[in-house]
Structures are given as structure tokens and as C-alpha cells.
Picture 1: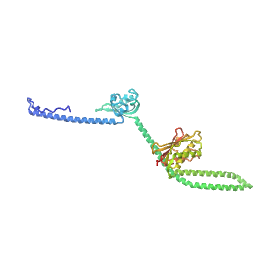
Picture 2: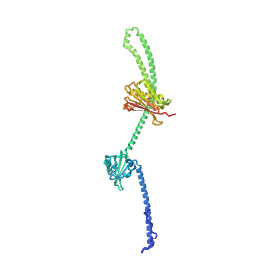
Picture 3: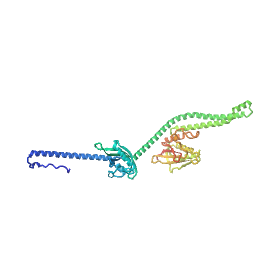
Picture 4: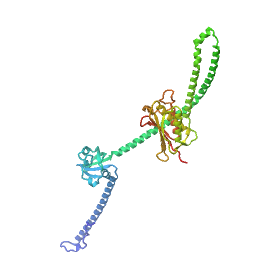
Length: 456
């Protein structure tokens, strides 16, 4: 170091001074050596403290630089004394240009704006409240656009505990909003997953119950159909016999009994009664068969299925059946789109969805169904098949129950309430998902998601 003292002159004791002997000079030289040694020790200690201070400053600087929150350190008048890299990047100005400027001048609208006024009020509250003050203001970014920031202003104290300034730390609310939006989306996804799990468990439990009920119903239905067939034969024989008996003149008492018992009306009504019983038994058998399909665990062989052909086949059968004039907008894909599954079961699902749309649009002159096939967004993903009709739609209170077994909004005798439940179960067994949402132009939109078959 250039400011160190030179060593003592080695020949000072040789200078002749009156009244000073040699021992005195020896003491002086020893004292000078001690002072010089102390100076060297003090110099070493000062260099160590300077190095420690530099390390501390570098540590604080690294903390300020690494902060994602913006920081303002102001004096008591609100003039900026220190900022961090996040603040400089936000306002588009270097730290040197910000120092000495009023913190309120960084607000949207300038130093005389409403945000600047709220910032000055927060700094004033910070002087009297040790826990600080919170204020939400809008900073002007590098492009002059407002950036909402939530500042927490706390007092800055000296070594004697006196307030000498303020420290304001804030986080742009855009980041908080994005985090909240991501959390909300995750929460909604969790709710949907939970609802699907509950529905799957409910369907599995109900399936086991329905399987037993369907099995038990088969016997009485077969018995009923067999007896109805025998009853029809008996009725024909009785009609022939009574016709022969009534062909000739009857005694007055038998004629009166025939009229009182309304034998002729009973004979005329008997065929319709038998037909009604037969129709009811067949409808009950159809319901039992639907229950069996609903409850059975899929054991059929599965392979690649061209979904476009399945949709076209379903459209063909619906038009050949109860809805020949129903308008269906469908553009087949240019290339085959294959999924791994059962063609028969997927056809059953497509028939249910198309027939439901036709029933919903019945009586509407402009009723139609739009079927759209969306390929997977990425390899190995799921395709989406959308069925959007312009019918009356589904009431909000019914949306959560649409896939429940036996739930239907159709009139009595028009549906069993099992079509969508069976379709939901079949798509689930194929590793896909069936969902319902309101259509963009009114009506309902069912979406079938299925995994694409891997190429061989």
C-alpha cells in the first residue's frame, strides 16, 4: 500500500543530542517498531473488512438481481435511491436513470395521476406504521402500457431505529392472475375427473345389479310370451265354437245371458287384448336386452375400425328407419381414420346419438345435425367426433343426469332412458370419453373422444 509509513531510520540513535543517552534511543526505536507493527495489523484488518464488505455488497446485489418481484428503495421524500433488475426491465429504464426521480412519477398517468396519489399516501402511511402499507397501482411499462402491481411499502430504519426512507416490494398482478387461472383450470379438471370416477363407479355398481335383474326377468317374460301364444290359439277355437253355437236360435235365457255378459263385445275385443299383451311382453324383452347390453362386460374381439364407415352406416340406417327426411351434414374424411374397437358396438353408439338428434329436432322444419370429425392434435392422441344439432337443447338441470340409466326427457313410451347410458359405457370401454355441451347455435353437442389405432 502506498500510504504505509516508511520504516524508522536505523541510525537515529547515532545523531548527537544533548541530555539523551543511548538507552533512551533504544526505547524510542522499540516504541516505533511497536507502532509500525500495529499499523501493519490495522492495515491487514482494514483490507479484510473491505473484502468482507465487498462480498456482502455482491451478495445483496445478487439477491436484488435474482428477485422476480419489483423493488423500490426511496428516501423520506419518495425519491428513488435503489431499484432492482426486475423494476428496470418493467419500466424500460436503467437503475442510474431511475435514481433521484420520484417513485410516484413511474405510475400510470405521471406524478399527478390517481395512481401517483395513492402511492404517496401509501408512503406516508409507511412512516407511521411499522407493518407497512399495501397499495395496488398501475406502473407504466416501457411501451407506456399500464401494468397492475400490488406494492407492500414498509419503513426503512437507520441504526438508531429512525425512519430514513421506504422499501416497496411489488409483484405484477398479471403473474398472479395467470397462476390463479392455471389453478382454476387444474381445479376444474380435477372436478371433471372426480365426476367421471363417480359416474364410472355408479355405472359399474348399477351394472352388476341390472345384470341380476335382467336375468331374473327373462324367465317370466318367456313364460308370458308362451302363454300369450297359447291364449291366442284358445281364443281362435273359442271364437269358432261360439260362432257355431250362436249360428242357430238360442233359448231366451241364453240369449239374455249372452247380452248381459256382453259375449259379442268380449270376443271382438279379445284379439286386441292379446295383441297388447304381446306388444308389452316384447317391449319388456327389449328393455331386458338393453339392460343386458348395459351391464355386460365387453369381451368381444376388437380390431382396427374405420370410424368414417361406421358413421356413414349409422346415417344410412337412421334414414332407412324413422327419420328418412332428417338433414345430416357429414363430410367423410379423405383417408380412413381407424380406431381400435368393436365395429358393432361403435355403430350402436353412433345410431343412438344420431337417432337422439333426429328425435330432438322432430317437428322443426330446419332441424339438422352437423357431424364433424377432428383428427388428433398430436401423434398418439385422441380424435374427436362431434354431433351438434339445432334442437331445443337440454335444460341445465338435466345436463348432469343425461348419462344416468333410465333418465329420459322423451314422452312415456318413446324411450327407455338407456341409450346414452349404454353409449357412455361402450365408449368408456374403448378407452374414450363421451361428453355433452351446449351447441354454439343452440341445441346440444355430444363429443366422442377415442384413441387412434396405432399403425401396424
